[in-house]
Every structure is written in C-alpha cells, then in structure tokens.
Length: 555
Ligand SMILES: C[S@@+](CC[C@H](N)C(=O)[O-])C[C@H]1O[C@@H](n2cnc3c(N)ncnc32)[C@H](O)[C@@H]1O
Figure (cartoon, rainbow, N blue to C red):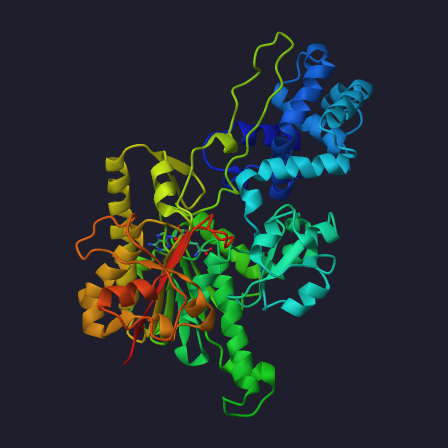
C-alpha cells in the first residue's frame, strides 16, 4: 500500500486524533515512517480548504474520474507543496493522474494565493499555519531544555540564535508588540521566571523540524506540566523516585534531568565521600527512577521518549505495570523516598493543539460532496474553560463539557448528571492511586497532579487523602506554600477554598495571591488551598489548565 493510500485510510478512520491513529498503528506501509504519514496527513488537512478550491477550479476530478477525492487532495498537496514532489515512480498511474494537469493545477494555485493577498507561497504558508492553530495561536509553545543533553545557554546560542528575546509572556503570542515590529518575521522567545530551563516561543515556529527537537535536547512540554517534577524537587538524599503513571514520559524525563543535575551539583560540592572521578561518583550515587505505565502501547512511547531524552541509565520502565498492583513493601522499593502521581483525568484543562484538524474535501464534478467530512472542525467546537480573569462568566458560557482521555480522544458530556457521574468515578480512581503512593514505607514526598480544572479531581482528592487512614497513620501533611521551591511558592494562582462538605467546587473562590511570608498560616482549609497550585488556560499566563499539590512527612 502506498504512502498516499495509507494516509487516506488514516484520515478516513474514526476516533482518536492524528497522533493516536498513526503512532498506535502497526500496519504502516514498509517504506513509510509514522512521521512521514503524520506530516503528510497534518499538512494536507491544514491546506485542505485551499487545495479543495484548486482541485475544484481545475476540474481535476472531472478529468480523472477514478481518482478518489481524498487521494487527490494528498497527491495535489505533495505536487504543489512538497519539495520532493509526489513520492511515487515517474510512471506510476497516480502520479501521472496529477502531473497530466500540471499547468491547470499550478495556475489555479497561483490564483488561490493571490485571492488571499499572499505575495509568496511562504506568506500563504504563514496564513495557513495561523488559521490552523486557531485558539492555540494565542498559546505559546513551551520548550523545556533537556539538561541531560544540553544547557539553556547552548540552546540560546544555537536553536534559538535567530530569535528575538521578549520579557513578558504576553509578547510571545502578540505580533503587534515592539519586539515583533522591530524584527518582523523573526520568532520570539521568553525565558520563564518560574521553571528553570524553560522557554516560551512563538507558536507558529515549526520547532519539531529542528535538530534539537529530534535529538531530544529540547522537549515540548507545557509550563504547567513542568510543575509536578519541579515541585517534587527530588534531592540525592530522597533516594529512589517513582513516576507511577508515566507515559508518554514528559514528567519522567523531567524528573531524570532534575535528579541528574542535583547529583552532579552534590558531587561537585563534595557532599559525597570517596575517591573516583565525577562520572564514577555520579554512578555510585545514582538514584533510580521507577516508571510505571499500565497501557502497553503507551509504555512503548514512554520507552522511546526516555531513550531520546538520554534518560535510559536513570529510568527503569515497567511496561504494562498497574501501579496499584505494585507492592510498596517490596525490597526493590525500600529506598523510594519520592513519588510523582499524574493519573488519568478528565483532561478538561488541555489546550486543543492535538485535536483532529478539519479536513475539507473537493466535490465530485457533479457538485455532490465527495465523502463525509472527517475530523472535527476545531473552530466550531464549543469548548470553553474558565480563564483566570473571569471564571464565573466563562463557567456560564461553557455550553458543553469535553473530556479528553489519555489517547487524546474527546468525549462530550451533555448532561450535568453524566458529568457528575464521570467526575465521581475519576476522583475515586485518582484517590485510590494517591493512597497507594502514600503507603510506600520510605516515602517522604509525593506530588499529585491532573490536567483538569474540576475541584472533584483536585482539591477534593487532596482533602480526602489528608483525611485518610494511611495519611494519619503515617503522618502525611500538605506541603505548605512557604516550604515549596521558589518558582512554585511564587506562582500566584492557588487552589480553591471549598466548603467542608463540598461535592463539587468549581464555582468556589479562587486563590490568586502574591505568596507573602505569612500565607499558609490561616485555618486548615486556607492553608491547604494556598498550598495547592492551579493553572487556567486563558488568563494571560500562557498555560493550560492544571492542578498540583505536594504531600510531605516530617518523620
Ligand atoms: C495523564 S497520563 C500521564 C502523563 C505523563 N505523566 C506525562 O507527563 O507524560 C496518565 C497515564 O497513566 C496511565 N495509568 C492509568 N492508570 C494507571 C495505573 N493504575 N497504573 C499505571 N499507569 C496508569 C495511563 O495509561 C496514562 O498513560
């Protein structure tokens, strides 16, 4: 099966997003890499409204009656826009069916470009990208420099050397600011003030095409998703670390980078005894990260990510292992002092960059629509979540609730009853995992996080965990704001203060203080709320919706 037939099949499938359809697909044609299929599918979707116009105006499907519309779209994409052209032998029937109409297709493409007032194909490409990003165009691309492979300084001098630096997050996505006007067309970057080694860059820049990305020197990870590993702050004296729900591995690799950097720092400062060079000492002091992932396919993705990130020596992956079935008292885990728990959740805080892009198809010559439109139209989705500035208004305008599962699949919840039932099931599952994490005998630190904005999955789980037998018996308490690492202490958006009998707290008071010395000394509810860290999409901080809280034991 050719690259084009396979890509057409992927685009015609139902369910999931492009990534899950392609990277979870074991039946790709022998010569096509998943990346090649992904790039062709995504680029064709992005260009599909223009290509449809070109195909219809040139009457291609009238002359080539056997050519299915979707296949015509993919072939015309490569013919007009791919540097390598159509990747089929010169005499191949499919290739010939397009190249026979070279003059007409090229002329119609030029007309389509001029109609859009784009002086060059490159200018048209920028329009297409901005249109495709839609809502996400107002969300920066967050780039974590992977310190296992590189440094922030090296990346600023290489991958980002042609970028212009800006000094506030708002400027990265605003093309009307001074920096953007001073160097038009140049991408922008901002060095984050809370998370070390993190940058925000212009969303339209094609970062996935850089060497730094393919070599694992940089990792694309939303700022808020960097909170858990940073808050856990695994130090050499904490011993081994567990990432209990690890795939695809963003937080595992972040943990590995933090562990490694702290060991290097401790060895340099002579905190460890004994002879030997730095490398030898590092190995002797090596902390292990045990990464568990229940889903075997996702565990394979985790494996790849750990390898690319250069974290293989530190991370031990348990493929397909249910964390709930891991025995906390097993000898292997006797030195586990810190656990990161980031379980499946409603995904209600996710920014829709990976959702299925809209696909426009050319009509048959008869004027009938060729095939049903596949994939969602991202602009028509009524997906709204509270922003920092006006949670109540945002909440009122939320017309339907969208859950995003671990594979990016969207589930629309239409009724309040259904929403409550789903949230209750999720929070019971999340609490059981959290209580299991609290049971590890040597554990002193645990972080609990979700990419959900619902209190039922967040503050309520934290409260229930603090009230649990295992927490009381073993002396677990919340990691107060004043005790948190600097960036997390200073992050202004805090947890919700819920009534003590709350069953659903989304409408409750939102914390948004400035992290002064005395915070965290109020009554218990306020201390817990202030210790919890939240993030909301749309509040001008450029982050996704997120929640994280830390637990500690003083023994
Ligand atoms: C939100 S995702 C984790 C994302 C990951 N921490 C990252 O930052 O890349 C949740 C993951 O937990 C896995 N999972 C769910 N229940 C689990 C369990 N009982 N044991 C281990 N993994 C589990 C899911 O398959 C999914 O891959």
